[in-house]
Amino acid sequence: MWIYEKKLEHPVRVSCPDVKFAKMVISQYGGPDGELSASLRYINQRYSMPTDTAKALLTDIGTEEMAHMEMIAALVYKLVDGACPEDFKAAGWEGQWVQHDHGLFWTDVNGVPWTAKYIACLGDPIADLTEDMAAEQKARATYEHLIAATDDPLAKDTLRFLWQREVVHFQRFGEMLNEVQDWMANSKHMWMGHRPEK
Amino acid sequence: MDCENLIALLRRLQEMEFVAVELNLYLDTHPCDEEAINDYNCAVEALRQLKKEYESQYGPLLNFGMGGFSRTPWQWAMGPWPWEI
Image 1 (cartoon, rainbow over the protein chains, first blue to last red):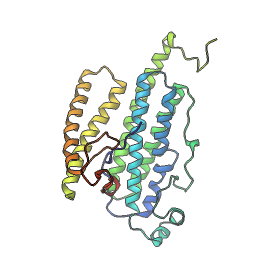
Image 2: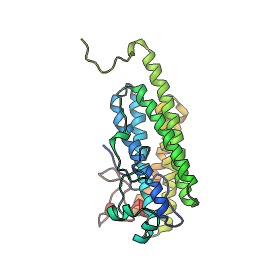
Image 3: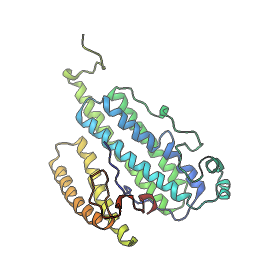
Image 4: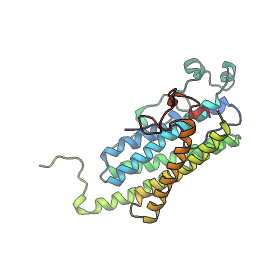
């Protein structure tokens, strides 16, 4: 079960609304390397992890990513606060206005809706943990692009926090990959896939 | 509502919960680090105090029976919501 905590993990503030930047930030909401993808990827992969600590790590990072999705939502919410149709048109984001008004929607930066294709789950712990490490690096790089694309120091602060979390998650997944490899190197635990015993 | 006090208290809560989150993830891959477990337990204690203080002023932080008590009217459904602060 999940419980909602009525607070953000880290403050989200902007100096002033900026629809053009909101259009870029949405990539971390519903894009391939965004927070929705991250959260669902980890929470979904935990069922085929072989050790209790790997199940714990995927549960915990998947849960933290959900809090990051909320921070990105709050950032987009604040960046479009009070914007009129003219502001959306000037920012080249009139499609958002026509289809969603000020409502949020999971798309990438080009308006392509979120899809489960962004997530992989091989059911093989080495393949899946390696995928998770790559996902963290892709999210880190995306945050660097976003940080470089704004001059707003408050928005930068929010994005830097999220950027730094990707670095920590990558580190933890790397440690878990080593642990699971050691576990599998033990002959008693040789991974034969999920096959029924004959 | 005293927004300045809310934001200040919320900030302390966010800081202490961040300590707990960070130690939690670290412990998932270092489960025998006694010093870190001790630090985690200290963070739990500090967080409990901060939550109690926050909830007594601004209502439950968690719902479904996991947070503090509510006054009347039902405080859970009162703003501001996190993205509005």
